[in-house]
Length: 625
Image (cartoon, rainbow, N blue to C red; front, top):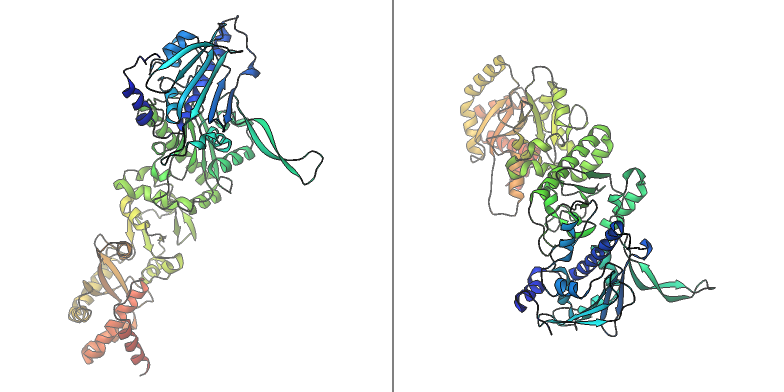
């Protein structure tokens, strides 16, 4: 028995136990090697007239023998002679594919998958012994390479009718840790081929049992053993998109990503340049059930030369475009030795950047030219775009701000910030907004009425992340954002301000008593001109609004965050005169009115009341008189 020329059992143990983290990868590696061998023969036939091949004979075959626990992988490729078996399999990390690629670097379409010479050894993860029978296309003799692992290998002369290579794995017995018999099940093998090697360019064939109607019978079925091609070979994304029908895209999307609906948008691109790749992306018509949960995994399926490298490469998508499904295929990627984990190199970053720009461009086009479709998309994924603005301290706000929509009080529909600004009057410099649970509830806010009455447009924010987005944006095209429920709203003329200040100064003692009656739950009580028909309202002062307070306190933490609240009384409402009269004549009744008015204001804002029974009794007492 010969010893491996590489350093030892330790190196082979490392190959088997550390480099590959997923045992099923072995089948991908062996099929990729078989594909390489066929590639080499095919390219040799293009330059050597003595090499004659029939393209129909180029294939990879899989055979299962459950009884003897054998799995065979055969190819009609270039084959190996004795020296090549010695050099390629007797020396770990010596790659014939890498050498071939280097020799043919100038030729186009030389896409050899294996470059490291270690993929073959992944077979020892699942096999107790491996046998390789190979015959080179240019020699008459065939040779057999056998090994049980790190102890060494033997090479002997043998018989083989045709050139090519057959690898036979003696699958390990099942253990408590792993069920190796899965690799002897035809359904599992078929699934692995579909998962990892579906787009290998040569047919991968295997005998499979199918349930079919008996000949001449309408109801009786029988099991029929037939040879079938397991892989698709030509990926949809490599076809000319002008020749692809919509039904083909839809069928691929539904079967690949397990969706019951057609995608909302298909983005099919082929990029040549500093890095070349093809991508087929889909914007779903609806969000997955787990989309807004921690369990959801974003990412695109990543292929290199048609071989699956990663099922979900998260680095190809920013979080705010995590809803996109699809595949990316590139031959320019730098892979690590196991081909399982992508190195964080320049090509990957460049592809990711291009994909992000392409998705954004497609969304902008949909917004501009297919508004109904975009609004359908936005209903499902708009919140994710808003998170994209708010997260990472607003790093991506400029990329996303023109994709978000809010309901407009004037237009009675969703509008972009650009559309809002384009409809502003010449000297307006403020974008007004109001927050609430629903559009109807926002529309009924006391603070909204006066702003609308003055002819200003208001954006209605109804999702909990909305105001955080606005606070992150700060301004849009030089126009500042103002919450109509905040203290800094300024709609009065200088004369109106002066008059209001005078009235508030005259009644400061009354307001002090009201504040005291409310146990200083409010920072200030005052008259206001911001209301039209409503008697009272609450406004916030400082960085935390009332709506933000509700969001913070709904979180599963012990931290209690409160907005700085001001109670405002409509100076032109009859209740203002009633309060003045009670203050002078009946302090007890004045205190009762104060509590009722404050509770009304809290209810309007969607805030709870600490003492609902007391307030109910006070109201009933007033009604009974």
